[in-house]
Image 1 (spheres, helix red, strand yellow):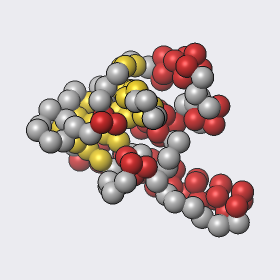
Image 2 (image 1 turned 120 degrees about the vertical axis):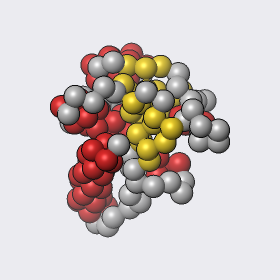
Image 3 (image 1 turned 135 degrees about the horizontal axis):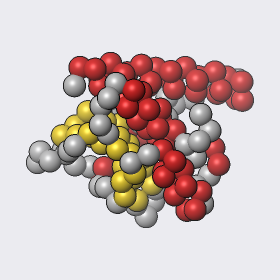
Length: 137
């Protein structure tokens, strides 16, 4: 798990910096670093980095009446670098959801994708906002 935490932290920092720059350019100031709306893009970035390290993982989607959320799964372990959008969570959450009390509603798995291209096709078919589709890396 040490490698997973290191890679996840690196990707999260990269996204935080990108969002700070974007917010300053668009709004003249920085907004929340929750990464709300970035879950698919962030998860695909993380998936690709973990795959380069030969770590077998999948992209998971939680569909909810209020939102959809994408995160990475390694077995029963959630690796979520955008859980901060749901409140008081760490920038990198690595959680075994098979343990009692660890499963949050936004980690209820509705669909699993083996490849980013499958997720992107689903996002396009389902009408996700273009700025949230994971092929905009």
